[in-house]
Image (cartoon, rainbow, N blue to C red; front, top):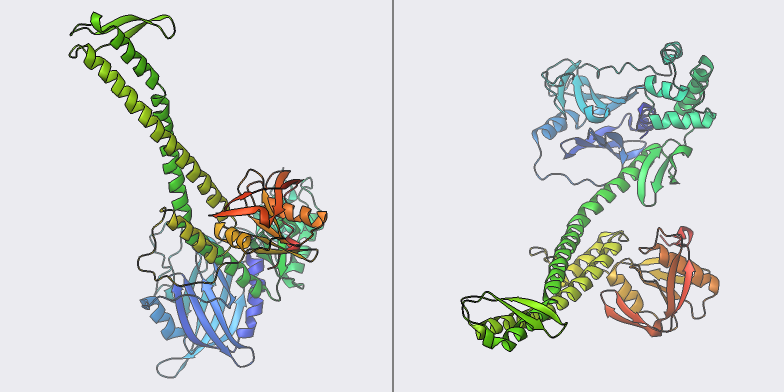
Length: 562
């Protein structure tokens, strides 16, 4: 992840527009995050988020809304007292350390001008936001005891010291960097740089070597170091093309300019702060969506586990019940040889006229012959009934597991909370989830399916059973319905009275992509007119007069409406 000193330095350059601005409000959405509202005369109002979250340390201008706690903490009250009304006089950037220092000026209680600093240390698990006045720590979002082994103390009243040195060398000390590089023998130049350079993440180092076309067969040398330094300085001081790279809908990272070594598709932004805001917005949205879907996925997983167990138990009972004929034959043999059996006998040896063998039948010595025969016939009757019940339970469990498999597949296609709510409603109707007792049911707008345009024709692709039912039931009789063959997947409706083979092929490729056959090289997709499709609810249909296309699953993202 290139959240290195280089990226922080370039993003901090953009914060100079806040210089001269006054802090109007201070919020603390979480214990490790501050939100400062700046009012500037020339650049308008801006919200600056500062976070020392160990996983996501960051400082950038944001447009996101953060939920604030109802009760202000003591730490927040301190920062409000010291920061509200303060004017930002300077943003100090570090070229090789992941730090930004905000120099502030304000009037104290005696109306005297005071100066202090708000220091953002964006150093991963040791990240912190520290308030410093005259070199003394006033407060910090993360207080670190002096007893913490290997860590510097960060407590109110102590003298502020810089984070512990890493022993690395920045590109702005070229001679020292060359000397450090020369100590690495037997490794390639790229590995040597990654081990000793300060301020550049491995991702950035790899990108620079890629742009310089220096392979791993090249050993460390002064020439390589000079070329690397020149390229790195260009990234520090040259023009930027800020982007966010995505893998599908998942954000990978934000960059000063597109990194060829990081794959995915990129979206450009006017400023690095805007790119950072978009990245974290997508990241938090994905995390929020995952948290919202977690109980739904847990309910499906639990139902699958329970029904697999029920299926195994029912199958075992059916196998046991299939031996019922043995009890019937034993009962008949006892009845046929009733004259030979006396109370107290434990076994009957008799000819089995069914297979011509000699059968050995166990007897209860406490029962007479009639009672032993009756016991065998009773066991036979009980097992025959059990076989019927077991068969019914097996069919019910298989049907439910098939439906749950479909719900699992549709959960992978859901992209917003409304779609998840529709899946939840389906699970509630199946008795697999309980409705929210305290939450009032509000009528919401139905979620929308994927919409594609294929040579002028509209293709609708459902993301869940509710959408599948809606697009199928609302389609015109002349529309074409498509579905992957013998697998769970989205229903697709192509709205074209007389579709061409090219339109059908691309529609089939999309239908195959949004199914369990997505990863296959080829997939069969059935298609027919809507008038031959008979929905049964829950995404289940019967269809007639269909034809089949064999296609390679493709997303056709350029034809998707966003």
